[in-house]
Amino acid sequence: MSARSLRLRLLVGAACWVTLALLIAGGAIAYLFTANVERTVRVNLEASLARLVAAIDAQAPRSPALAQSLPDPRYEVPLSGVYWQVEGINDGQVIRSRSLWDSVLDGSAATAAGGEQFTTIAGPGGQSLLALAIQTQFSVPEGTKTYRIVIAEDRAILDLSIAQFSKELALALLILGMALILAAWLQVRIGLSPLARLREGIEAIRDGTTDRVPGSYPSEVMPLVGEVEALLASQQKSMEFARARAADLAHGLKTPLSVLAALSDRLREKGDTETAELVGDLADEMADRVDYQLRLSRLRLRTRSHVLNAPLDTALARTINVLQRTRDGEDLKWNVESDEGIVLDIDPHDLIELMGVLLENATRWSRTQVKVIAVRIGNEAEISISDDGKGLTPAELARIGERGQRLDETAQGSGLGLAIAREIIAQNDGSITFGKAVEGGVLVTVRLPIAG
Image (tube, rainbow, N blue to C red; front, side, top):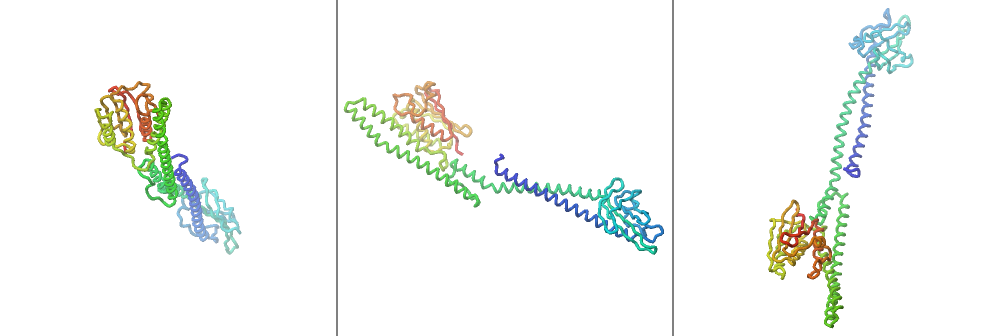
């Protein structure tokens, strides 16, 4: 797909939006998960803090002291990641969990009026701890005792959970993104399929297999289909009009040309031979040109909206049958060798016109025989027509087929027949070459595409 491809633009746009949406969604989900985990940690710390406060025995001889141990066994394992500490403000005495070993937590965040403080502090072994600290007072017979209490948990536990969740989230979002891009590709493919079918329909019209855009299309595409059909109809109408005008003009000139021919005859009868010859030559030249244009106007253009196929055997048989009844062809021997069932991608009328021009030329110059060989070569048919006439020189072979070119001025004809043949072959994606035949005459080789 090129950079100007609509499909590529839609896919790139969809991929960009999907990627952006997933990045935003992934960031939001990760943030919410982190906040939820931190909230869960705080709730657990609050519950542990409440149990720790309830376990303090403020009336113990050596205060602070705990009336009972906390139920979580991790507090008894050194550097386990969960810690507690109670500091007596009055006497500076500190008690702490066995998990702290010989480390001391910073409980300065707790103040008398601040209530519970949730913060991050440094722990043993370089750990970063999420801590909940509070400063509270106990009433005893001797007065009031104030304690600063800290309970904490290693943040690495939280970070590990977040990292694991982030990996799983990234994998899930990657799979989701690929699924969404695949869905976008399918949507674009299905959405643009009417345009692909429209292109195929236009190709079918160009190939001559139909005269209208085939199939049904969504309402959004129907205006384009209508415009294409209107354009094709307008083009066809213009071509038919031009062809009709050319034919009308040519027919309209035939009457004045007939008058000129009659005038030439009268001048010759009166003895003005020079003027008669001049007028007669001009009339003949103009008649040839008119005939050439008439024959061109009858050619079926490859944009014609009908199926083009013509059996070669039929065209050869019809043409040879006609030529065998002419003065030049009735005494000739006709040798035809053709592969069976060759059907050419050409209008039947154009094929008969082409075979008529080539075989008529061969008939005119042949002495005893005309040979026709037709074979399949890949997707083309090669038709070779040769005669046993006097042949042509290399220079003459190079000029043969030029419009109005007559290689023998003494022979009848205008030299426009082979020009017509070239027009037909060019319109049907074929080729024509001229060479020297084995029999001594001219070898004409034509290649035309096979139908289907």
